[in-house]
Each structure stands twice: as structure tokens, then as C-alpha cells.
Length: 176
Image (cartoon, rainbow, N blue to C red; front, top):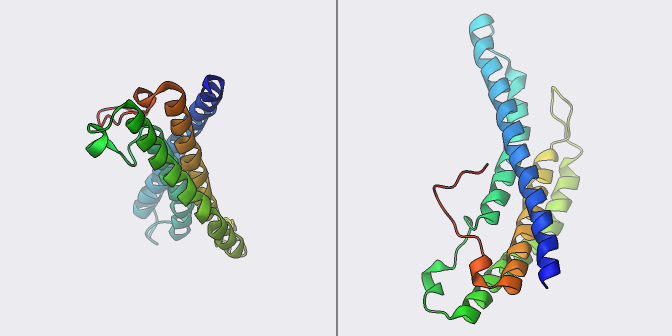
């Protein structure tokens, strides 16, 4: 079980780096696009670049999805703290594993409908970039898969090392 925990930790760390990269890149792109549009409002009589609005529409869901996965990795999404003080070590492990497996199972059930909706919206395209509108749904799938993986990794880590191996939410913690 410890070898499995190490493997899941490695993938979880890789996922965290990927999500931090997505957050940084989407924030920079959003700042650039929105900033350019603000400047364009003052330079052009037309009042800006209307078509630029589709870029934040496509990027923002990726920012949110990556942020959610990072939150899950730090147990900032759901907590079992309110009753864990009353449980012994085995009870804490069981509670943490249960909550994370409920999260895993819930998202597993929702993947099918989201894939179906993404397929339907793939035929719609943005006016400027001609990109499929399904990109937003793919960000949802990414967030769901990342949440499932992070929840599974927490459960495996806790089974292998005990309740103290579960991440504790620290509101002062930096994402870097």
C-alpha cells in the first residue's frame, strides 16, 4: 500500500504543477486580453474590441477548474473536521476515506452527462477564433477528473499512512 501511496503522490504532485501552470497561464492571458481591450477603448472610437470577450469566456472555466483541483489537494473543498475530534484514529481514517470516495463516486457519475453535453456543443463555434464552445465543458471534465484523482490520492495516502497524512486546510497557505 505504501508503494501505491508513493505512486499516487507522484501523480498528485504532477497534477498540482499542471494546475498551477494553468492558473498562471490563464491569469496572464486574461490580464493581457482584458488589458488590451481597456487600452483599445481609449484608442478606438468604436470603444474597444467586442470580439475579445470570447477569450475570457473560454479561458475562465479552465482557471476555475484548475483552482478547484488545487483546493481539493489541500482539503479546502470539503472537510470532516467538525466530528473528527470525536473519532479515534481508525474512525478518522474511515471518515476521510469515506468522504473522499463519495466525492470520487459523485464525479464519476457526472462524467457521462458532461461528455454528452460537450459533444453537443462541439458543433457551435466562437465568432472570432472559430473554436468549439465545448472547450468550457472540457475544462469541467478536467476539473472533475482532477478532483477525482486528488480525492483518490488522499484516500490512498490516508489508508497507507493514517489520518495525519490527510492534507489540512490552511487559509494562509500559498498556492505556489
